[in-house]
Length: 82
Image (cartoon, rainbow, N blue to C red; front, top):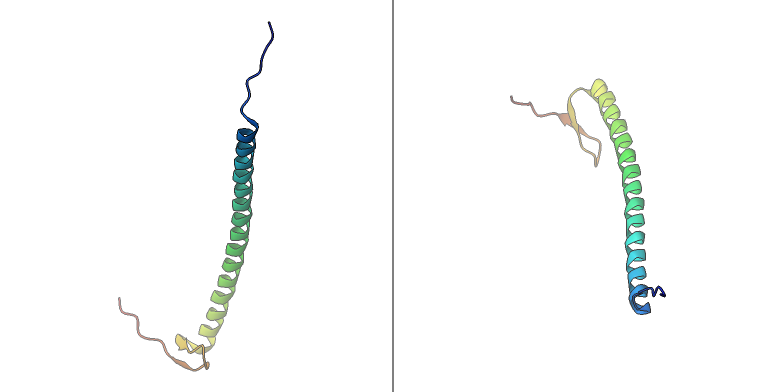
């Protein structure tokens, strides 16, 4: 008795392999994007901490004020209501 292996057609195998390769490439791309996203978020957090620190320094020097980012003028901050 001979064992006859059943196989799919060559075109079907090629299509299947191409689709699997496409999925694997997309998964790798998502991984790369997630890595870039994580790195970008870490940079954003660092920049935010630096900005918050600088604002605290400015508040110590000038008090609670609003700063016009176009020309640097300062005005009293609006009174916060509870």
